[in-house]
Length: 84
Image (cartoon, rainbow, N blue to C red):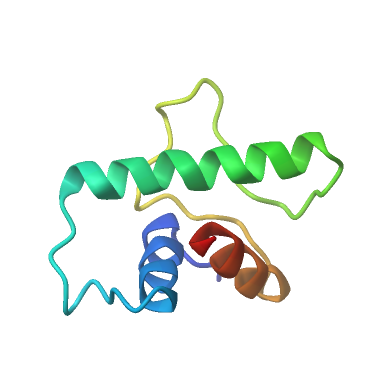
């Protein structure tokens, strides 16, 4: 089973030292992080980096609870790059 998009964002926040359990993250901030996650993986896909991410077209259909579809070997790369 893959991470949900929320779990990837939570792991990214933890990577930044902003664990969602210690900091209050607003719904708007989570929505922004979801847009950034989807955008980053759409760009990777356009560049030929295909890692089975569930990117929904048109934009706006993606939710935090959507399964990311990422294989476990890609989790760390996505989390650390999103943190950047």
